Picture 1 (tube, helix red, strand yellow):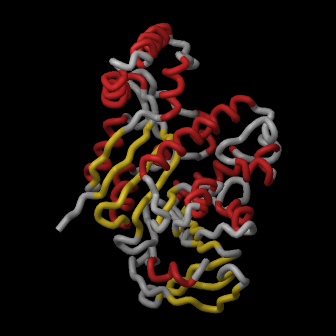
Picture 2 (cartoon, rainbow, N blue to C red):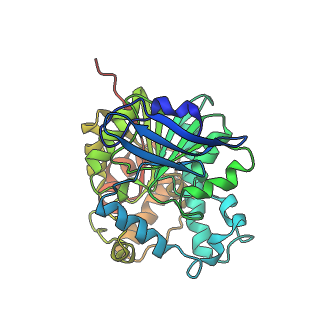
Picture 3 (cartoon, rainbow, N blue to C red):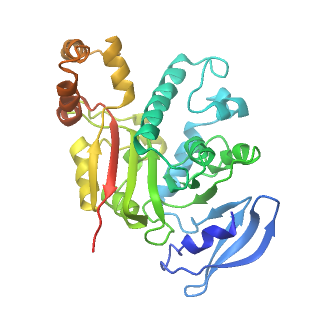
Length: 340
């Protein structure tokens, strides 16, 4: 943690700013260990190995989430994911670090959609960015490399799962802040960021309206809430990852209309885009589907997509209507409206 972030922070208990730094220990890069003290409510928050911990009283939901991720990701189950070589390749991993072809495919889908989002938001390099559900911090590091001032927020600390993964980037000179906190109770002052970013995070929110409201609160007017790689429930696709749910991880099957509704209620003007993954699959007429009706409709869609005269019409249809049936995946950029 660096001194510069203190002015952005508020106490999650009483929403008061002006936290006091106490007993600080520093290295050449940051404050490594200290306490942040809130005078009005007398709460104290530890800083350990550079990570600020605002989870002094986590809800049962958050506790279950932390426990669930630790069970879901462990060295016995996913040994290759607990190596620096694998971590530093994210999100575009390959066979040099993984023998799991499905994992390679999935991560590269994430990478394609992230690259599309980077093109769309056209960073200048001076933006202040908050990443929600940052996890292994690969996206946070990517923004930091582009010159942005970035903060990674998650509920999990553990290396190779959560925020301690950031140590591998910090040792190479890529700095960003790391904060343990509930994304539905953000410990930041109003209008602190230019961009709030999330990848595969929103569907983990128990209260989607509150998540969007908090994202809107900490954004400056005209700022962007960018949400990609999120699960969308189609009309016939309400199945969720039962294993994750059984372990305590929050999994929700939100429809595309539910996402848009939550963003609009929070004062955003959302715009949906076709994920890059789908663009490539339509180009190649290749998608792993089992439902016969979906196979037929996908092939027809692909044929029309590859005809340049129909492409713009098909893109409009897929983004605005096929989401309701197929749930093709959330890729949204929502602008915070200027309010007087």
